[in-house]
Amino acid sequence: MKNHRLWITLSTALVGALLLGAVALAGTTSREDARPSPGSPECRATELLVPPCGAWFGAYVRHEKPELVAKVREYEERIGRKLDIVYAYHDMSTDDLEGQLVTEQEREVGRERMLLLSWESKWWGGTDAQQPRWTQISSGALDESVIDVQARRVKAYGKPLFLSFDLEMDTRIPAAGTPAEFVAAWRHIHDRFAELGVTNVVWTWTITGYPGNNELFPRLYPGDEYVDWIAYNRYNYYRCHDTDWVSFGETQRDVHRWIRQHISADKPLMLSEFGSADDPERPGRQAEWYEEVPSVVKELDGVHAALQWNWRDPGPHCDLSLARGSSWKSLAAAAADPYFRQNRPW
Image 1 (tube, helix red, strand yellow):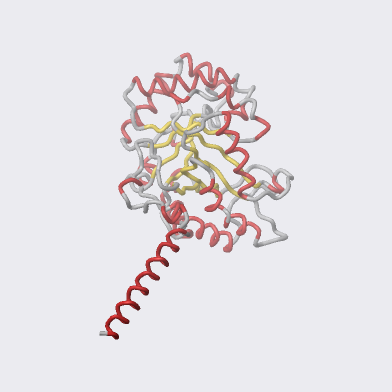
Image 2 (cartoon, rainbow, N blue to C red):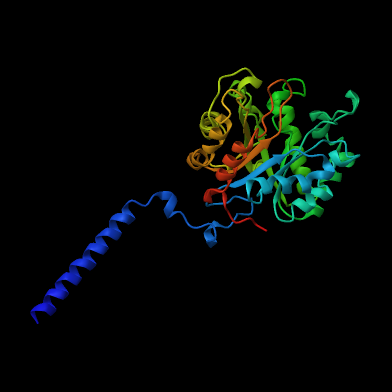
């Protein structure tokens, strides 16, 4: 009996120690570890394509229009995962693939991914007289020839897609018109789509996020009832714009804070273009820049999508694409973070 009582005492002590250890371990669990798993029901994307438990990962992949599917697959092979969102650009010409929402290649890409289409009030290659004006759009003068045509194409696509009208419109003031004229054009397109029964558009308002244009942004905002997501494009340009090297966090935190304070406290946010120039004198620097992406995105309240820009800007030293194998490896590691592994709607 004495040995039996001793065994019970030791067993009780051991169980108690294990329980205390479990409690202590639970006390050290981070909020990230406590977050529901991406596969849980509460992590399903909303009707506005918001992933409640993390963020989408996407990219702009440079391509000629007939090559989109192949180029997207090449990009995905290099980062070791399928993209959630693929970014494509269109003008208002309507006479070729540049002006078609949505092309057959985009339909194919959209079978397993979401689309973000940037629709610009321009006619690339057209004459000055052919360039659409914000006042023309808001007046309804382009409804029959442009707006209605594309609205029906988007409606026929069927699936929800992100649509951004005149991204970075803050760079086109005053040449393209006034902020009030842009807002009127945006609202007209939004309302015209609604009149035609187009219900699968997630309206995405995209600005540069450049601090020098902060005074313009509130005047360019169409209003909460006309915008579903707010997006901004920030880069580490380095020698491209003859600036100091800035980290990923430095490109994102200030503009995020400003938007939350001055535009919207709760709209879902998208890093619609992010990227870094290369530093040939420090070959590993670009890779180090991308390592920071997951941790910074997690700290930015409401950022639910991040799209890497894998191309260049005009001008010398303006190649913002991934420069070498180490950069690809770093981006692949960032994209593999569980925070970017959310349940796609299809």
